[in-house]
Image (cartoon, rainbow, N blue to C red):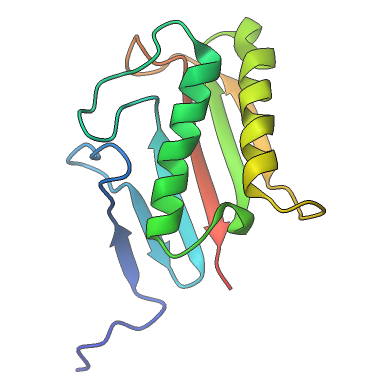
Length: 141
């Protein structure tokens, strides 16, 4: 039995750059070239406090930064993300979320680069303070 994990072994990704996960799931999981990031919200990574009450644009930015921290801890970058899923509580928040998302993509995907896919759905979220939750899947290499 080798002490070295095979690249196809399932590995938990952990970083202090994103809020600590609840005890029953991982911030991210990498298996082979696939990296899945759990849904993130607009929390301060250090305190877990929900930030920017009522400001979906600022919440979207913070949420994407939390996703990015986990993507990078998993050995990938935003350019490796193939899919973002965005969960919004209010349909009317879509334009402001989209603005923050577009700015983030512009900063993190090189000009002419392939932008990730995205799905947006309107839902109820577990914490009342959360206006947005975002998860991501990246493929590395």
